[in-house]
Length: 117
Image 1 (cartoon, rainbow, N blue to C red):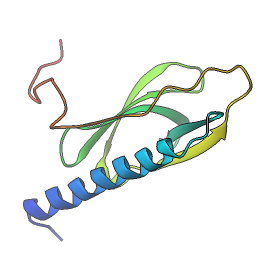
Image 2: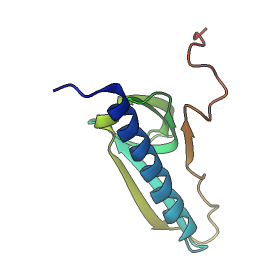
Image 3: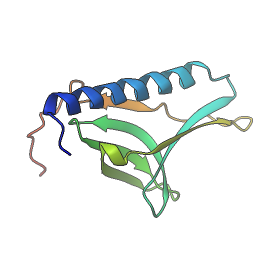
Image 4: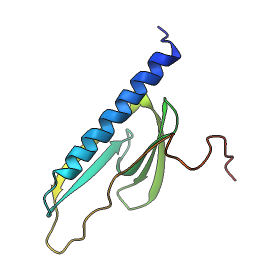
């Protein structure tokens, strides 16, 4: 079954808004000794999400770190996006984790057709 483009765009926008709202609510509710960790499981390993980028209505890019701390970028279709958001207690004297970035196509500075070099 195929949906009209305006329906797909509307649903994608709703999903983006909902994810942004829920992440903000979790971040705002953290106590000083808590961190919010967002994970994406790609079927092989659990990745720690640093930034969620919605460049189009269907493509999501996740700036992530793997378990060894290697920087990775994961691309997935919107309907395959499965994030786990977890509030964790921070160990004493441990610095806060990085905040979660959230970027939509309207926020990005790079034009969509910028070639990779």
